[in-house]
Image 1: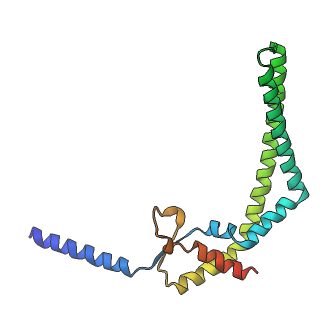
Image 2: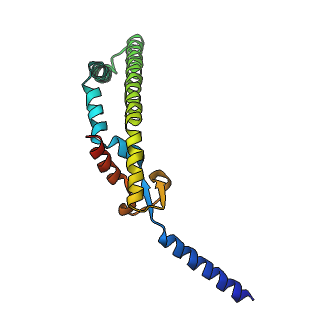
Image 3: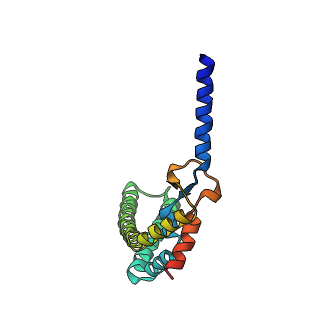
Length: 170
């Protein structure tokens, strides 16, 4: 009786593996595809050339350079500084750090806004292109790349999605 159960279990496993073999499974990283398109890259370049963003980036670089210069100055004078002088340098460094954090938050907000605009602009094209790829490839199971531990490169549709979206957005 026990061998009959084992035989049935083995048959069930073999049949389920056969069903899986008939499945056409693929993986996709839609966000990476969207941000890899030529249009997304163009939008990023446009933002970087805008005066507001470039002035923020220049301010960030300037404050960073000021911090490095102040740190070198402190290191060079470390042995001869009084407590009062050391306190002044510490205060200057804290002000610079606060300036850098503020500018960094502004830059991050600009980047986040751009990412949202790109997603809103390109997501409909991505979904349309993805639907076409699924139909053409007779994909029966499509998984997000982040949810997959391992997949062979030919199962990843991300590159094909980028190519198709580039054609649709020209």
